[in-house]
Amino acid sequence: MIRRFIIWRNHHTTDPKLRKVIRRASLIKRAKVT
Image (cartoon, rainbow, N blue to C red; front, side, top):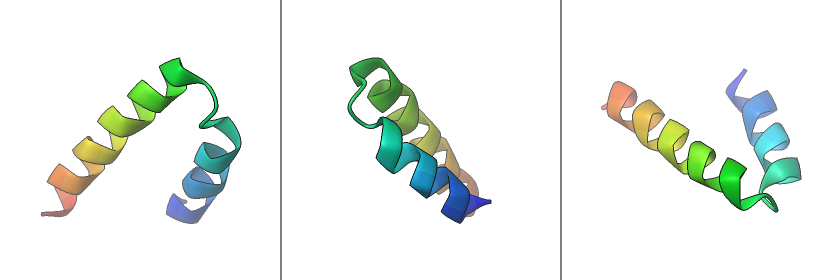
């Protein structure tokens, strides 16, 4: 699932709104992992 998310993210990083959401999501994921 994570791999799929990374692929999806790579296709949508041009959108600044999505970039903000992605940054928040990655921070949440990082917090969960640690």
